[in-house]
Length: 283
Length: 271
Ligand SMILES: Nc1ncnc2c1ncn2[C@@H]1O[C@H](COP(=O)(O)OP(=O)(O)OP(=O)(O)O)[C@@H](O)[C@H]1O
Ligand SMILES: [Mg+2]
Image (cartoon, rainbow over all chains, first blue to last red; front, side, top):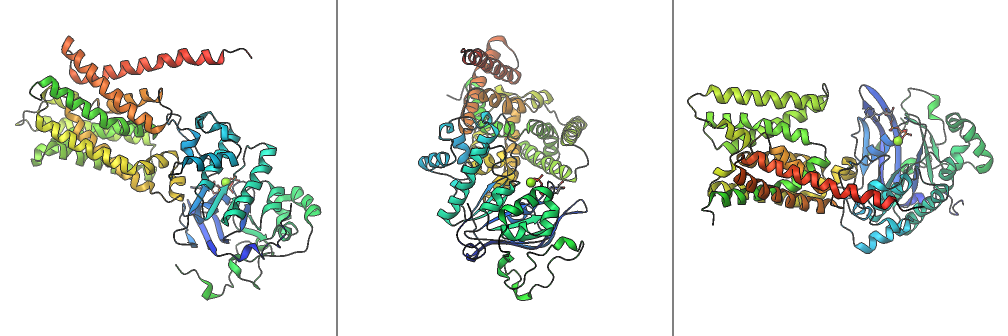
């Protein structure tokens, strides 16, 4: 299940697609997230984990430009093509929409490509079904097919397999890995499924309004901040994934390793303060 | 051919219905029926202002409808009152203001009934020209922005994340609504414009399986309603605008029938 290449080595050397530096988002006088640093490279899967309301969706939206940064900055490669699976999508029933038409909603696609995408997510028989008639899991598969069909540089998947059955879940996660392998795109994923996250991710970022800890799955699992955040479930996984501790730095700040440190230990502290000044985002 | 007043009415009405079909679908999908009504109610004020400063009434109507929609957006952003309350306030304040303004200009002989309920039988060849020009403009812009409009109807965030421009689409949509209200006023009157937008669209919903098909069907159904309504109006000497709306309503009722018959028949197959 574990990938052969050591994470943070092979995968994390691709070009930076999008990054956030000391990102903060405030609403109604409250910080939803603060001091977030992250970086998604070509060919890399970065996963955000954390409890409900910890700011995962908010962070992802900021990275793709749907929410403006109230502090810090967000940078994206100019012309970056994004495929997005939002956490929820409320559609009015008065809009008649077949699955095939949903797949071409934001961009034109040849018929064959549409069917291939539906085939890949396991619902080729639903091409002409109405979107409103789909089950939750079928709808989720259609959304994933829609996002990958764009051949994006960056896939942003907000709980992409919610409501998908157990077998389907494994299949879809392996599809996500395949997409990465085949197209070399970067993936920013949000998931509550810790086992899958640890198996299929290059970099894990634990959020709780701030970055609690980050690094390779192994590094994160053995991090005290992670264990505090996820309690028993997290601790159980320690036995399964105990490996050498390792870390990946955001945007290649090698040698500067706050990543496996519990930032959370010092509440209110400016998370990463000792950044080299020349590494500021240009553009 | 356009010598006959009935033919002119038919040509004008069908032209309008073809335009309101796709736009009305967007109104229905975006749950903006009440928004359309609010803009339409402000039209009377536009007419009054146009008379006061001596410009073309259509320009006045367009300007006021566009202003009201911007005001609505600003008030919605401030989030003090819910949208439907705001629209209720703006719609009726604008209507009342329009009525007061028109009656206050006592030196003008304005056909108030014509404004409220339309006067399709009095359309001139020039009116038809303006109507078709405006209609072509609306349909052209709709076709140009269709993908953005449709995608942002499903999800603004999805559209924006994937490189479309939902904000521009929303503004264009509101301006198109203002254009349609300006050109439709003479045909069905300001009180019934919304009906011509949403009833054919709602009727088409029962029959179409895709958004584009629904838009085309709404145009066709609207044109049918105009033809039926005008014929009925001629035969029974009923007012033309309301007759068209009643015909559209009759088509809507008809569209409910096949659905009710077909659906149980399919699910009744024994397990
Ligand atoms: N537009 C907004 N305005 C105000 N508060 C918001 C807004 N969006 C999110 N929040 C708040 O920000 C916090 C983080 O929300 P977010 O959706 O990012 O959480 P999440 O980590 O994705 O949670 P979940 O696991 O439930 O999806 C929540 O407390 C939420 O109430
Ligand atoms: Mg979320």
